[in-house]
Length: 327
Image 1: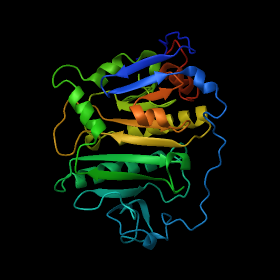
Image 2: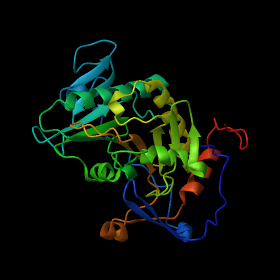
Image 3: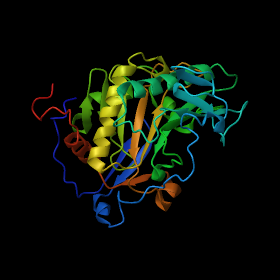
């Protein structure tokens, strides 16, 4: 998986790609990137004008916490490092499902690119704990965890947080991938890592950051464990994952000037074994918009090939190995 093995592409040619593992079909149209309205990063962020309910001291402004990592204090009091509360405006409520907010830090406005690594590790620990706990609820079959960073990505709060939704069904995208993956034989994601070549942004000891072959949006990148694993909640190397996640976040912010970002955890169903599945974190910078064609067809138009995206993200990686020196 050496990023040095970069193929030569004509970036101006259009191309259609299909990823059988995800079922996604993408039209790559590089010429569309020249439109003056595309990929603006100078749009102003919404500024909060009210006191932040996620900040320490404002615990009574949220719903009652269901989990916390604390240095001191009782539930719903200051002294926490990570705090989980039910969403005040849930999309699902028990017994149909659960919708929770993971408040990742007591520091208002903190970003994963600059946060202490231990802070990211503890946020991931909270993700694991809540997935394990909600998997024991009757009727819960699947779950998604997502982080909306920046108002263009759907965030309504600047305070660092992510959300978990536990569902009474397996999400359609996950269901497709489970059906498409072979019950026996090589894992398609393991095989994809072996063949990633010029789409690799970086690797560390346990994880690889790769631009997927059929990326939906410009500069989409996935973070996957290099060793096969189906369930995020069962991994133990959270420190290694936190380091890789911060490194990738820094690459995205440096290359794209701190864009809004959606991050999503894709993991195996909570109610069934899926040994052939391979969990991942998907990072989608919000540089363009989903418009009529995408909504009408379920296909995507992307003006940046994944090889081109990986090349730019590699150049922005301060920890990268110079070409020709990668192992």
